[in-house]
Length: 314
Image (cartoon, rainbow, N blue to C red):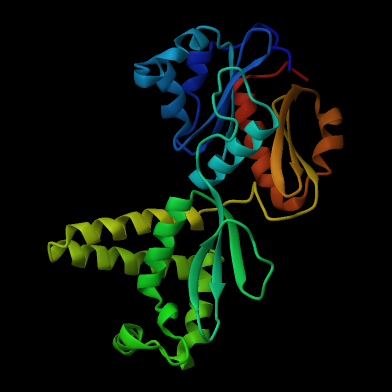
């Protein structure tokens, strides 16, 4: 992707043009080589931090002096940004990145079982292909376990087994979990894990209310666990489409202001990202093949690319 006529906008100036939204970013040097790729909860704050006090990232000071251009893609959630960073780094590791996998989060699934003997939610590192419903993949085993804990407080599916014994029988009675309500509890859980907006909003409100009651009762440790569960619920229920268990291959393209952004989806994972300058006629050949469900994502990426690195007049 050659620089636009008249020279590129200074990188530090570009950082101020980034949105306060989650996404991935990368830095290029004067020759167009990718120096570094990262993710952020807030693109503007994160990228601007490279020109401030680097703290424990002081080793990046030399790299910052070489940044000639910034590129970025806005994501719909921090979870989506984490997945996109991971996918891109697995394909190509820039010289200033240390970890190929873009962090230490585990790839996990949530398993929902309606078994008569062992119903409930569990965290799995591989899909089993069995009769239970499985949701995912998700990044972050610790976050996902926190979400499962919170959902278990709201929906006592684990206590609805046939003929529970001992303390489980007592808990089933206290929480009103019987075999008769097991299908309804499973449906309610599935609605949350399917990211149904009404179900997610209700679960969030219930967790927040329980957290506040625990804090009011001075049960601060339990309140902290519920707050962690609330944050984890936001993580797993946030929009995330750049990684799927499977899906057709596609090229997702957007064009704005003379800049064409091309994003490759292979095996259900968005794993390629290219930008180049071209006119509308040439761009149309690429954008017309973009799946309709990706059109908004691609157009948003192209508009940001054009703002950061304006193209030559068409």
